[in-house]
Image (cartoon, one colour):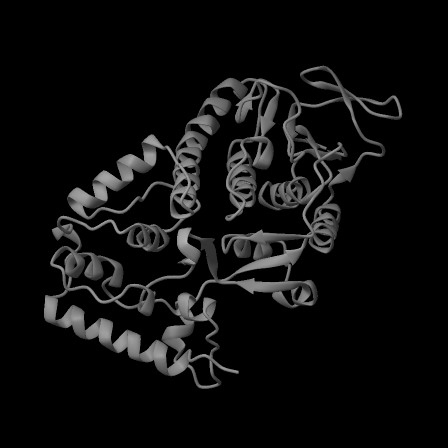
Length: 364
């Protein structure tokens, strides 16, 4: 078969998710072999961020197939000091298809000291605190909802494995391969596999000194790239973006160093955002969370009302929720994003909050 020969190390959710998605995005080019490796004991349940829904659609994994062992997840719950709980809801503030943006309008009013409470403007926040849509809920409100999943890890891994194998992925027998050279693996049955690229998705750090990204013949993704706060499943987001990047930069012998540099350039931006989000989770939980990137985000927001826009696992709306929970206030707003006069913005917030209160009330 034409195309690169790629070996994926691992036998857990991250390995099978990467294999299934990469096979789909690369139009099943080349040869893909998943090589089992010892991996850390998986939790009984695992959280999946909303971005995983795009992968599920590509892989034709219907929500109904996850419902027997999964539950919707509408945001991040953080236990803060003093018994307080902080919510970072998924989803957006306001109707996604409506002209203008409630986030930008809210920052304007906040800089003037007249913004309404942010939590009351999120449909996802209402769902996180026990709200449920009624049979006649406004479609605009429903469009603003974004849900991830909390699933049984074993059963979800089996679904991903089936999806990968159905797309022509091969699975090696045995585990603990020996890497004789960076591109040669000796399997448990004595078979020697020569690969153009080895993807480490084993959910563990295999050896000290490993670096995230694509270096030589090895690409490390997911948990093997870096460990982050367990409150938010950054490893899943990292696997999804890693598969997409590799599919767009399929390794060719004559261009591998160039493509690896581009992969790592894009990865560096993502890792900076993930590191900042991890530090933010730590700070919200009352722990030390040093981060140069997060300090830069904070300064930009305080001085100019600007939210992070680099590729990362959090949306602008989620960052705004986190900044508000930290008590950070903008000194001004970005006039380039000003679409409505102040009085009209205030009325839009009142209307949206009334819609949430009416259609997402707590139900027994």
